[in-house]
Image 1 (cartoon, rainbow, N blue to C red):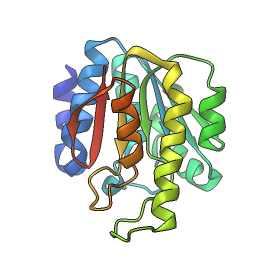
Image 2 (image 1 turned 135 degrees about the horizontal axis):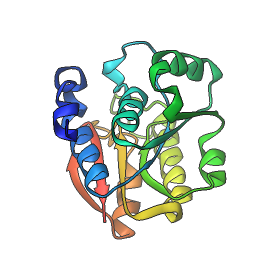
Image 3 (image 1 turned 180 degrees about the vertical axis):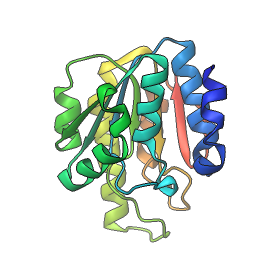
Image 4 (image 1 turned 90 degrees about the vertical axis):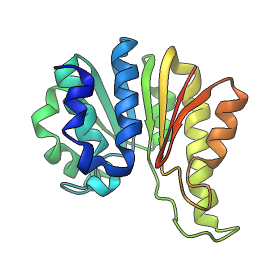
Length: 193
């Protein structure tokens, strides 16, 4: 089974994230990327509306020889994540910590970075402090992680296509200034060099 065939089984469930997940996994496989790092884990069983990212990363790791580190500040969320991804537990390291601290202390090169911590309001309310907080949080994650990313690595950002710019608004400007290119956008934003 190749990567494209494997991910195709999740086309309907992944919905608005399918094309970006598919291309990200294809890039990862083509480039031999093995270390997947995620901030913000699965919070509910069968929660395809939020992406089920840790599940997909775990299954990819099992099928294609990779390793996943997932971080969340909530131990309740992480307990749920452990339960939902139990079949892939040998391929996933579960960390409960602030994402900035986790990324700062991460001891390896990051091949595939997925940023999805902190909820972002969907409504378009200019000056909304929760919106700015989520955008700034993701930007700071990116600033911390960028020096650790493999030159052939990929970055996938969630909560992108909101009318208010979503969580990705500030991070996308930063990545572009740092010489990265957005190769696919939608509900997620996929970046490479």
